[in-house]
Length: 323
Image (cartoon, rainbow, N blue to C red):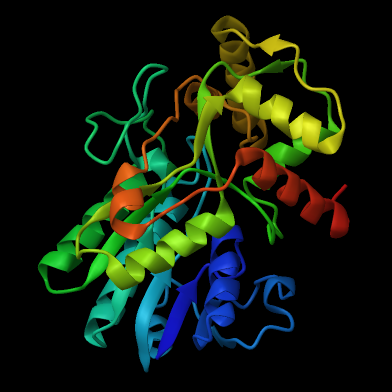
């Protein structure tokens, strides 16, 4: 039976599509009219035009499918674009869940560790750790989308939630999270953020998503994280893969807070919020360190070595002209 994938032109969605095809599973991809055609070029995929904001197109896309992987999302770490985040991340997720339920399809909803509480240098966070991250449209709408999935499960939808950490790997056409790798590798940054990150390979996360689809318990949540390290260690690893200079030190909060404040002022003056703003700076101070033990035990989730992941991601960017 056919599997529907949303976000099929994005980093995770494109890797999921390719893994499904490798396994001989027919794939239908929901794509917007304005989507970049390169990620699906040459792939044997039934690409159907639709939009998460159009419930009718979602109902049509779900016809004849037995599984749905919802990997599309609106991602912006900042204080602006609240309306777009609500429409896409919350309303769109609920509409897709309703369409999947109507045809009896199983569903995996791709959330993010950003919807969960952070860890600490001494303790990894898991699915049950209390707390939350700084409030911003992305964080709050991803949490609300998870609530929408849980409500759909109560109505009978067989759905699971996965929470990937910081993904790197091939097929990052936009690029998305790989943009950090490119910026560190191509532009010398003397100081890295103070907090921590969990680097995982997008190919392993794609396999984890499909394992959740096949073996996950309805309503169950699975963290798909990786190797926990400081941003300083991660940035050194990025520079090593590219053969460039890595950071010398970690930036302290007074400086980074000022930089975030400046980003907010730029947003106020121009109407366009830069990637570096008060919210993204606050997030970089946190320890995004997570345990994937539940996924490891229930889904046989495994994450390859971070050095291999970073090297493969960098090589893909080199091969495709991003450097």
